[in-house]
Length: 515
Image (cartoon, rainbow, N blue to C red; front, side, top):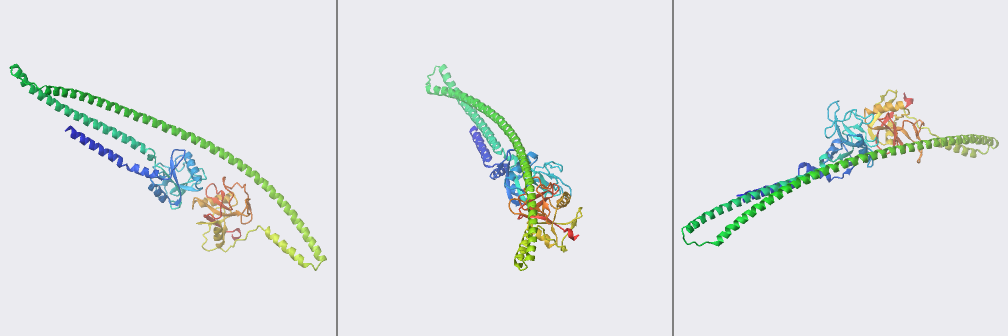
């Protein structure tokens, strides 16, 4: 019977071990799929996957889920700046994150993937953020600030490894060790039961032998002849010795199993203590790394400010050079006037030399064209389809929500009898930015463009007015190295430059002579 119990315990233990090793949990399967993705470990101890494919928010969320991941959850400013810095090394644009409006209608209830609420007055939002949209993405160029964006628009996105996937392998190994330990205790218990059964059988055999000896003793008392079998006595003594030794071995085996169990629990306790110690050390190192990163960012900001100051000095020097050039040009113009006077005198003296005077006249017209910086006047005949909107500055605009490059945008405005918007002062910039935010969270092409070739930039509006490089309306970190000017909806309509071949939305304006 004990052997049957032992066999059943072994079969049950083997089935449990096989099920535990061959059937990982659903979480473990998803985490294995997630770890096979291309993940980047940042100094905050978390792993991310940066996707440079334009997708809508729902499609991006589904892509992350198919990889065993979820859209990134960023709850602190330090974490936002860290993720934005890593994303900026890949592409200088915005990326979808997991926060989304969970309410309906005009109410807004922004929540992260784990259900944590993002308050409307949270410092994580960028200044002038469009919170009327239901989905959110993170800006790289504003130190990781958040902004609302239409869920149907396409953008890059960031996936994150779920928190339960960081230590699931170790938990599973600990469960396997515990399972093997309990299986060992089952085997020991079955062995003890089997030994008790064997001991009981030996006791029954000894009793039968004793009962067999009683008639022999009776015969001896009666004086009868007895044939004593010495071999039977030796066998009985051997059985008693084996029985005694068997109990000793069983006791030693149980004692050793108990000690093994105690050592196992001690090892497990030491492992947990060491694991907690290592985790605390990793957190401390991550904290120190974040401090060093913050110090490095401060040093970079200081260096950038020094560079900007040097650029301002060079700009002033360039202005002085331009001033000297204009003075030289004025002298040349006076000299040219003197030359023309001399030519008239020669014409009076030499009336037959008309051909030379024509050549000089043509040359003068050619130089006049070279220095003509005026722009063509816009036609006041605009299309009836132009949906002009009068803003608080008294000017009329059309906001085009389709994306075009700068030259195409300029041509579309001209075909409507309009021109790209001229935003020269702070009031016009604020008015256009405020109206633009009600339509779209990004920015718009405007009319200013580089009027020179080469590395030196001279930006002008259509009427020839110069947009100075030190104008306070420039965005703080504006590149100023591209040829076409773009106005942001946030930060009171600051200027920036982009390549003219980029596709953006644009603003047309009714020319001043058409009012």
